[in-house]
Length: 126
Image (cartoon, rainbow, N blue to C red; front, side, top):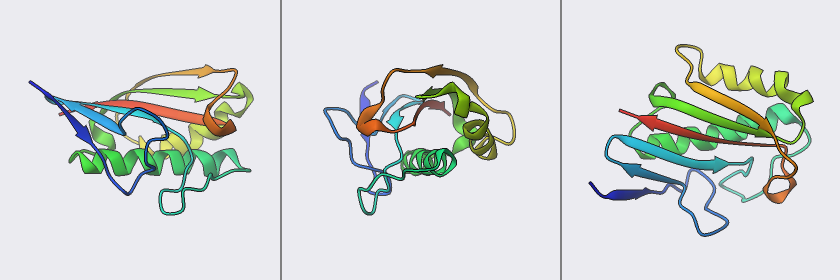
């Protein structure tokens, strides 16, 4: 098996030395996504639910580029600046995983890229 870089213009371009996702066999490892609107490169800020929705849309675009969707996600990690916003993030997140949600952990962190409030990464498989 060899790794395959997954890249789409429908999600933000990497802002460092990493790929949007790597496919290895039937597994897809999606890098942490933040609330950057891919068409403009601008951050979505001011409302944690709008931020989370943009993060999930970015993940959805990367999954689609690999021929997958949210039903393929088996594990996710949510990084939050403020655990007090967990319920609002969870509400938006839950919309994308209405049936058979993946395993998950959520952690509060001291800082995230570009000062965002939420970052989410996922692992998917066929």
